[in-house]
Amino acid sequence: MSHGDEVEALNVDELTSTLFLRARIYSIIRDLFLFEPSQEYLQKLLQDKMLEVISKTYPGECLRTSSAEFLKTVNEILEGREVKLIETWAEYTRLFIGPGPPIAPPYESLQRPVEGRGRFKGEAWMDVKEWLLEDGLILEDHAVLEDHAGIEFEYMMITTIKAGELLRNGERDATLNILVRQKKFLEEHLTKWIPKLCTEIEEATKSPFYRSFAKFTRSFLKEDLDLLDELISYLLGGDRDEI
Image (cartoon, rainbow, N blue to C red; front, side, top):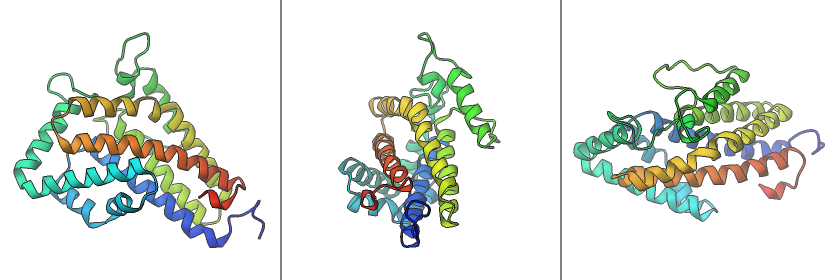
């Protein structure tokens, strides 16, 4: 089997597992930007053990420690029962919704002002909307815009799942195309404003949960950009030891 033409069967399971792990993390971040966490949701985070494994075994120290801190705050909410949950929901509203101007508006157009002025449906929104349309994705939830943090993370989740399915079916070139496009989206959009948003959350929040969530999100984005470089290099025919 030619390494230049096909991914060896021995490595497909490892590579697809990596992709689906990425999708799972993107799913978690997407959910927590779009919704207040329910007790059931937080319990499921603990039950699937993924974050616990990352917190103990991930080679990158920053993501490993931020995962552990995030898990700790999830446990604290569950141990605090309804009171802690209500406090978390109130903080979600204060940070991302209002009633007054949100403390940390989760929209790229507001976080990346043009000529010193941010506005809804700005240039970034148009870019992201066109990006999604090019991939055949249309936003169905009209309560948010395409440049909402949760939607941008959802885009990464959906395309990562698709990449994993394509790779599992032996479609290496199609997988590679998705990963290259993801890297460009990270570089042109998510990494241009999510770290700033995370800093705003850390500095303004009253909640250890959202502070740890912000740290986790920023750490994951940095690690994922590096991981994409390795995945792309591998699929282009680089050294398998890179992954």
